[in-house]
Length: 87
Image 1 (cartoon, rainbow, N blue to C red):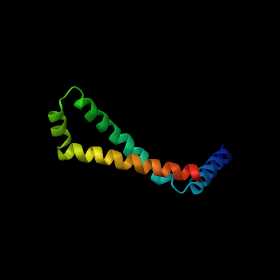
Image 2: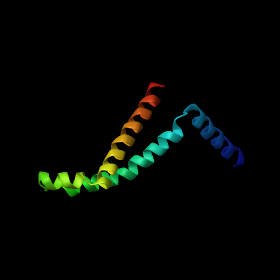
Image 3: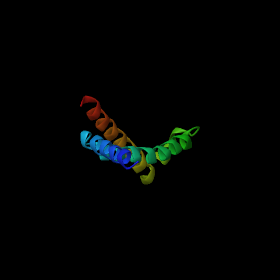
Image 4: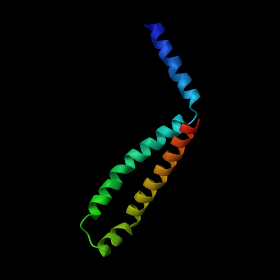
């Protein structure tokens, strides 16, 4: 049992060394996952509203920051994913 556990630990350690972006990728995944709920909630809140109401909702600072952070973290996550694919 101890030998099998040490092999697993060595394999995980080797995998983390082989992929230097692992921690960054995990953080990006966590951020995108957390912001997706807010993004979906905002989009569903906009359904059925006219242009003036949607502009007012999207113009509030909190909603604008959530939407902007969702876009930025999604693009960052895509960039990290492309680095992994290229390597």
